[in-house]
Length: 322
Image 1 (tube, rainbow, N blue to C red):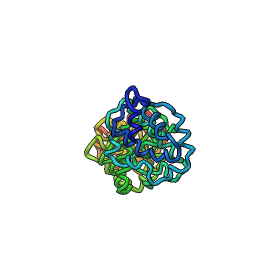
Image 2 (image 1 turned 120 degrees about the horizontal axis):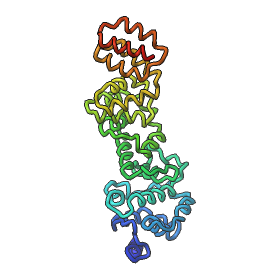
Image 3 (image 1 turned 45 degrees about the vertical axis):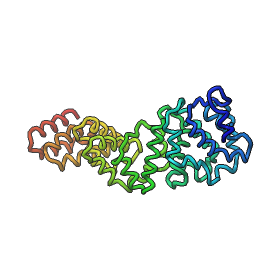
Image 4 (image 1 turned 60 degrees about the horizontal axis):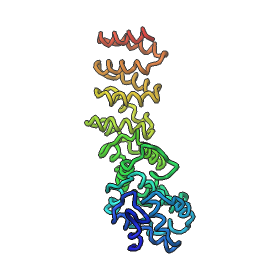
């Protein structure tokens, strides 16, 4: 390690343009030094690439190795959150670029066909590594994937280690975030098949949709859309949000309802028939966005049975506009 450290720094062979701390560099050397047992100077070549962005060919050479990715000692020092902070959290000059290069090195050392690759649901490899690999994989490019998203994915995986129920609660209630614009997070969810597990834990989503916090309600709606969850199992709850007073929550709910307008219209009609006058007026206003031309007979029957004059005027106006 001593010899390599002497070659790193301003004016040295490896300039450390990434600005990684001495301790961080020592951790990298410790993690990769066993590669020199397979082929001389691999660690030095990796450092050239990681710290200066040079000698990219090391990636293709690492991909040819058939042994290292199976080793039990893969990335041992970085399994410590304290050690990872030296590389991931402390300020460095190139930030995201360095993280991507580090991820590409680990990606090259792992066989994508290996059953331990990108399998966070089985928790066979460290959550930070799963996130970093996904972040760095050239197959999932995008401008919005930042280190913040890596931390979000890691937090989700840590929550999931206590069970899927805990993971759903984390996403929708405990630490809700809006995932609609986080491309890497949506990719992560699609890779893990997470959306297919939600219906078995729908009570937690419903709890979020009726939460006293408007932020939690709004994020729950947006995440239903982002994760492409089947809206029909939450139809009544989404409908309740579409009638709520905060505009963001209301408009988000209506947007989801419009993904399945026929089912939404049926739910709205059913609610109109069951609810009291005040709610019915709001439901009728909402119905205008979903009702179809074949509802004339239903509206006429509704008008005949209605006693409230204000509600009758609204129904009559809807009929006139059909």
